[in-house]
Image (cartoon, rainbow, N blue to C red; front, side):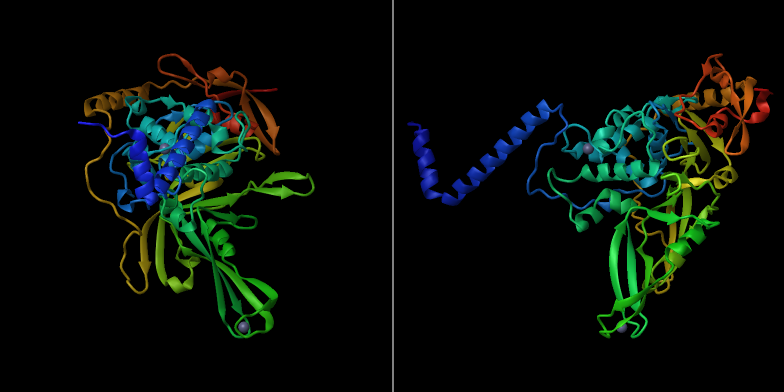
Length: 493
Ligand SMILES: [Zn+2]
Ligand SMILES: [Zn+2]
């Protein structure tokens, strides 16, 4: 048999099938681009991804989300404070106890299909939730894991972040959600609003705001819409989160509005309402504001009450005819301290068993709901529990596509878990509190006590002194970290 000459074959193809020839040229170009990017990625310490031109992300399959916990857990690990990274720890805690996000990531479905070479926000979060829930270490009391896959990649999350500097937790939360979105965005491309809405992040946290302008003359309405991942509300002068939300939807008067309907220059009213509410609602309380006297940021310390069950119906656009949109609180992020670039962050989270935990960097304590509700919250995390419209009048949680099926991930072996939990229970009574010698200080016109020996904060049953690596703290935070003041020996300065 005579083998055809390669050159001859090439010329036949180029002559007879010109379209295929053009396509092969394009794919060759793509292949070259891919190789070039891979070479560049290698050169740039592997923080590039393989380009996938023209490949758009498929809409996220919502049936993969489970909104209620499929496993039980009463205690999770704390997080090591690397270097003033309490802002990061507190945000990670709130996200870790967000059931649909964590349970989706525990299935490893993202990781298996991830095309990113180098840092990927969702892969990092997958690793984090796996460490928090599927390792044997996660069951042990006093265990703390290091979220180094985030701390060592802060610049990949946002170039504005700097390790060692106290960052704003809310800002970091938004950067992190953006990093998660980038995990399914094609390289050198931007998702369209529709593609973003169909992605994981917006499926869980995404809602839509309606801005409605009503003409006072002809009563015609003009609507525009904006998507949101959280609601930022003013708290100055507001006693409760419901008051702050009422102010959020308060109508503003516009004088000299050119009405398209009646063609008159008239007075109009502009009102912002929630047109679509997300399954997981994040409310950011604007505690930091610009102070013109000091030419810097000022913190609003006031207490703003928030309920365990929040009805969002009064803040939803009237056209939606929503009778009740009930949300249950599941995480609270707190900032303690005097200013936005100092102080300390910690989080209260509801565990899969429904009990509340205070996660303050490495330390994790069960707490009462009353303690949670008495906090001066900076961010509130609510999950939708029921949604009733006037037309349907039926009570069903929105988007609840929960499918009962076995877990795709493995929790620690029951025998081991039992052993760990038993040890945990046994240790409870043994815990020793050592008196702390402290001195009184005045801060923010209030008196606080500061321990003179930070090593003696808490002593583990094994006799090992336990010292938290809490960040740059205000005296208030510092004293908060050392347990109840009644256990201290207060001396004079
Ligand atoms: Zn990934
Ligand atoms: Zn008009």
